Each structure stands twice: as C-alpha cells, then as structure tokens.
Amino acid sequence: MASLFKDLSKLSAYRDRRFPGTQEEYDHALQTSTTLYIGNLSFYTTEEQVYELFSRAGEIKKIIMGLDKNTKTPCGFCFVLYYSRDDAEDAVKYISGTILDDRPIRVDFDWGFEEGRQWGRGRSGGQVRDEYRTDYDPDILLRCIGGYGKLVQKE
Ligand code: GTA
Image 1 (cartoon, rainbow, N blue to C red):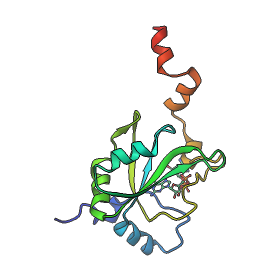
Image 2 (cartoon, rainbow, N blue to C red):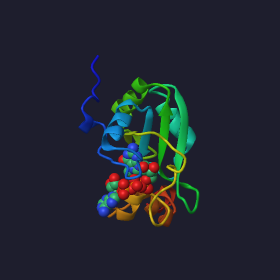
Image 3 (tube, rainbow, N blue to C red):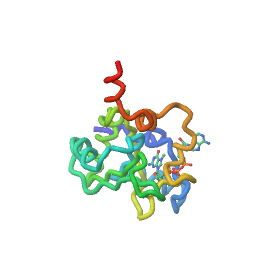
Image 4 (cartoon, helix red, strand yellow):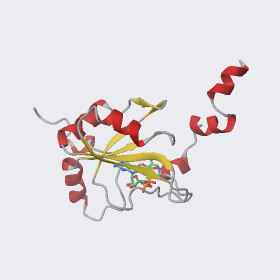
C-alpha cells in the first residue's frame, strides 16, 4: 500500500534549527526515521503512560522524556523511538490528536534523537513554545487553585 506520508509537506511543519545537515538531508531523515516527537504533554504525564499509549502502535525501543534544563523535570514533550517505520507512521496516523491526561497530544515525525535534544531550549529552561503561550494553560490554573477536587467541593 502506498504510504500516506510520501508528500513531504505532510511529514512535519516543524524545522529543527539545530539539525546539522542540509534541507535535503533533513527531508530524507523525516521520511525514513523511526523517531517521533510528542508535544503538548501535561507536565504530570509519566513515561509509563506514554509507553502504555504508544505501544498500541508497535514495539517501542526507547522513550526519552523532554526536561526543563534548569529544574530537570518534565516540560511537556518527549521522543518515542520505534523499531519499525510502519509502526511510527501508524502512531502519527492514529495517536496524534488523542487525549492524554486531558490534553490533545501532537505526534510529529522527527529527524532522530541525539544527546542534548531532551532539554527545553526556552530562556526559562522549558519549551520555547511555552514562552509564547497566550491562551490559559489548565495545568498552571490547576496548580494555582489546588486542583479540580477543591473546585468540586465548593460547588
Ligand atoms: N520533530 O514540532 C516539533 C518540535 N518542537 C516544537 C520541538 N521539538 C520538535 N521536534 C519535532 N517537531 O529537541 C524538539 C526540538 C528540541 C526539543 C525542545 O524538542 O528539536 P523547544 O521547543 O524547546 O525548542 O525544543 P525549539 O524547537 O528549538 O524552538 P523553536 O523551533 O524556536 O520553537 C518551537 C515552537 O514554539 C514553534 O514550533 C512555534 O510553535 C513556537 N514559537 C516559536 N517562536 C514563536 C513565536 N515568535 N510566536 C509564536 N510561537 C512561537
């Protein structure tokens, strides 16, 4: 069966500025890689939860949680490495957009994990995109008010 992902524009809208090669090499890596980037994770989602969800698409080789470079705590992303390209494509097709810990997660092809890529690159230590967030973040709201439990009790 022809792959849905032959069209380069469907592979990823993201371009890693730190990729060490040419655009052609980047495109080739995205077409063949078995590594995925998962974004919009809750800071409380564990590696075990990620494993449980993504192993539905195939056998996982490794998971690397994205960490805030200052606090060394999860900051909303991770990398999932599969053994097979077909399994990685299935995860993009079927798992992207599903809800994990109340958040719709984004599953993106990635050029491949290298040591250092697990750290948030934002000035504050977390992900760059969090520094541009204008919508409210339910995680932060919940931390401020003490969780849904308290809200429900007050009603
Ligand atoms: N494969 O979508 C992705 C992706 N993202 C967002 C991060 N990584 C990704 N990999 C894939 N697909 O290893 C990887 C990075 C790195 C790790 C942490 O996750 O390669 P980071 O998010 O902290 O830093 O990365 P990064 O990616 O270098 O920052 P960048 O590219 O400037 O911005 C990330 C996102 O922030 C952008 O896609 C955009 O949505 C948002 N953003 C950036 N600048 C602005 C702006 N001025 N206004 C609004 N939004 C912005």
